[in-house]
Length: 360
Picture 1 (tube, rainbow, N blue to C red):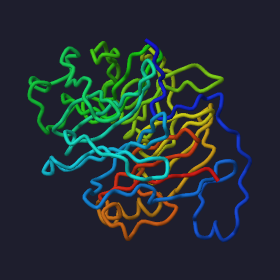
Picture 2 (cartoon, one colour):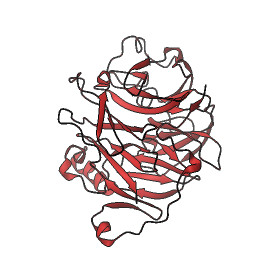
Picture 3 (tube, helix red, strand yellow):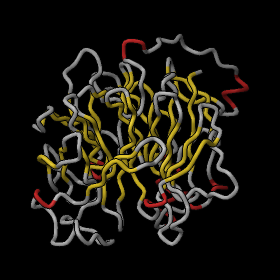
Picture 4 (cartoon, rainbow, N blue to C red):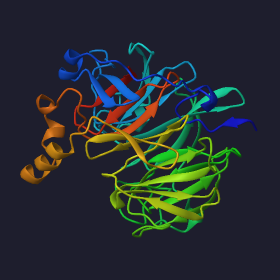
């Protein structure tokens, strides 16, 4: 089985462009039309995707890019609106192409794309009352669907046969995928048992690792996951251990290797060329080098967002679009590279937002 573990982008690492630093005018800088620093500077477009009038964003969650550079976006949606799509597709210019995925309303969460024997497929997670993982065609046709892997002995009775909106460490709340070189894939049970499950290409459960804990092989909300196969290093599993504010690295068998600290609720991971992309729920997106050093911080608004949380005892800014600022992020929940080294960011905000960062 020839699979490519390139969840979100399909440009080989060897062809990643090395761009010279951009020359920026003071006018553009003052207007915050560009963000970043050094070799990592981007034009920032917070309104790249435009929905048709009949649709509304309902807390955007994840983004992925197909081989034709089309963008796929999933939002959580409302279970009370079962006829509203939860997955939307846009062309490289941000024009609406199609929508589907009504079955994920109220629990739409993660989505990724993998090419298998030349054919791309969409992998989707549903949490809340859905508690499922699915494989779809790019037009939304179901290939297979699985529920809680009861053979793992991690879940309460009935979790697979009668899923309900119940939370806990004995519940299945899958968040994100990663694709292994041998054709297997991983699922992070980020909101449930805090484990990483391994499946074969047909969606059959094989094993798991992790569990609730403070780190070094255990997790506190393992929300994101990725296979880091960047040049000049060993291929390894990376887990965004969100509530521990760290990234944890494992070998491909799930054995713990190391921890990288210094993040603000890291939500997911992507890689391209020598770069690792980490969206952080606390108002910024970070770019890391092969040694996990931060080389650029994009859209940082942590001070204002944390002050708002302390003052409002919640998340007031995420519910009020008038408080959002150009060039600044509120709550990045996912991010990915496209085929041209640009970046898409989906934010956990009430009315949804998908930003395109275009290399300057």
